[in-house]
Length: 156
Image (cartoon, rainbow, N blue to C red; front, side, top):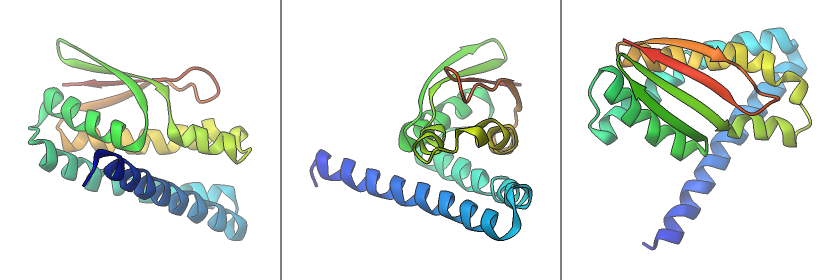
């Protein structure tokens, strides 16, 4: 199959994934309110990253620790359409997020006022879960949904 066709398939699957996540949240929010929707979403995003991290580990052959996490995250960020830079140093991995597809979806749906409250809960749940899967610790150094990106820090 051609590279273009593979890219189209990946884009299609990514869009379906994003649509299900967004629609699920909006429908729960309509019925139960924002706080309850966010609570349920957090519970989901404490499980989904386990699946993602384990699959990324399997696909990349990554091991535990920061080197393995960096390798697996690179795959995940690329697949989801993030724009990031990863910087490694002694006992740490820094991720600078320049563009986040989830923020873009909130922007397109004119719900940017919810970006930081959602990110504070969901990003923390997501990246903490990834960190645990690789035996490291996560810190959300900077949350900047309405500005130019976030800074994630992982340490051993």
